[in-house]
Length: 536
Image (cartoon, rainbow, N blue to C red; front, side, top):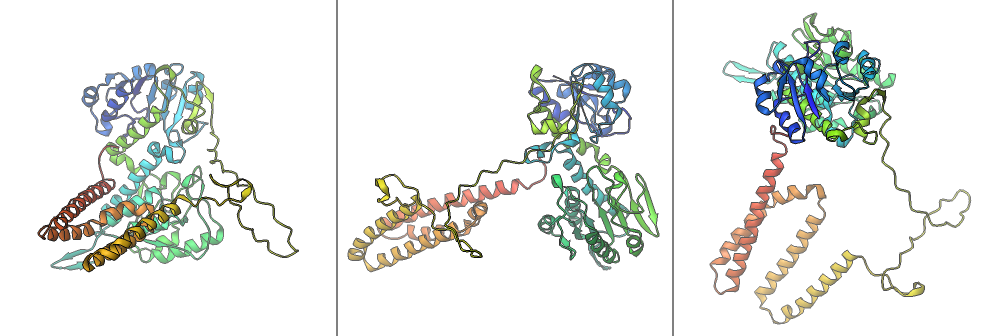
């Protein structure tokens, strides 16, 4: 396929869906790439970088007319949509609006339209979720916008002239953007607290070192796709009371609350704004949907009684380079689902492609049906129970055992024990057989050492066996200290008399060293998973 990157139709969008680093990925998939002259310049990618990566630099009209897949973050206007050839696929951020004029224009051309923001929130689609990528950057940038406008430092300062306390930051909404804001504010040294209607966010917030605020009303805020949902009036009243109490304490408020396809809920009201100290800052990440703060003016930064309210609509535009790289990776993985060459298509069978498809060869497929839940395996048939007296609670009888191999016909034979039990019985029998000659003929010192060894093995086995499987890898890293003790003991045995002692000491040193170096290698790989940077 021919992948094309055009100029932004409105010249206002700085981000792009194709970067020089992603050109090589498309070429490796067998595609060709064409870039309109100057298309990547607003994001910091000159034409020379695209040409070096293997893309052809052409005019904007050539991209729209010849590309099989057009990557335009802004939907095309009518003249550009009329240039698209039949069967082409336009990939854009549509905000899932099937009433957009571009839908009718592309349908007339029998073209296809993909709305990248409509990727379903399922595990397999996480690497294609452009909303999460942009929300993560927006949360980070919100903290920087607040820090720039806040008249004091966010972190505590200790100087010869004295100390200053850290700023108090309240983050409303602990989704992707909120958690990114928590991490950024904590990194700058602020005292951070967060609130969310979803109880599952509590552990995530606290794991980043912030406090989690709650209200007394018990109600779940979990909505479809991981978003929040509208809450009851009782919950909202308790929430407003909490915010009014926090307003007098906090210096910075960052609001991130959004409900899909609805205006942003009003959470930071005029009374809370009036209670804030002069110099405080409110950054409203929901400004594009009307804002969470009543004083927000979308696209503007205003001052209300000494409090700065930031209503900038898209903070990721200020980080166009990084935002473009993330968007390009998201879209590249989405394009890979289409297939290659003439086999490329927007399959109805793929839940991800079905979710993002607005038009397929001129046919409207929006809105997509919700993903079907995983089938629940049927419960095993229950054994027939004897009738019980009225009002009595029936207790299940013993579960019938399944005859094992070797059982006699008619059910008179004994079932074989489980494999784990059999292994324990065999091990115990062997240990007992070995213990008899040791107890009869071995020296007293040897018997004491063997007893300690057996008890240590049993104790160690019990300890490790009861550790959750998720902790087995960290446990391996922690055992480096124990292995170090074994090495010391083995080295002491190397200088002993005879052959057996030094030989066992050498084996102990060798095996424990393998465990130590392996533990360090595992620890290094674990830490690498959490280090920032690197290409995904």
